[in-house]
Image 1 (cartoon, helix red, strand yellow):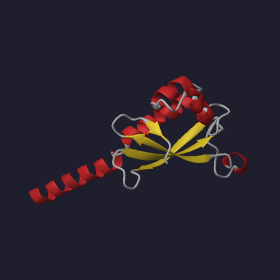
Image 2 (image 1 turned 90 degrees about the vertical axis):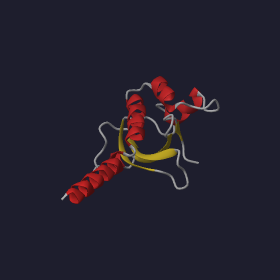
Image 3 (image 1 turned 45 degrees about the vertical axis):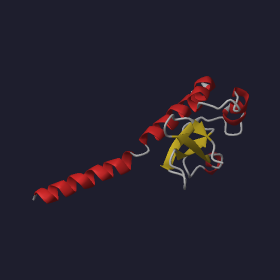
Length: 132
């Protein structure tokens, strides 16, 4: 009986770890995209933790209201995974939309503008970057 209980506890711990293993990175992505949805690009830029080569004007060219990925009015985190061969980063897949709320798949006009974006988040400092 003790063996069965120990096995169930161990399986439960492993399943809990598996379900929550990317929670900190997903939470950092939520903070970032919540700032973008609110239009607070200054906070989003700070959350991104950019390198010296990624200036605010570059950030706005990517994420600003008229940027490549913008405007971001709604988002949905689709999943997260560790990129092959890396142990210090997590790739978070996010659907972003210029419409609020996130358009339904049946709304073809709006859902065509929804994009799937992959963002890398470094695990030790939660800094963001684009995949190479």
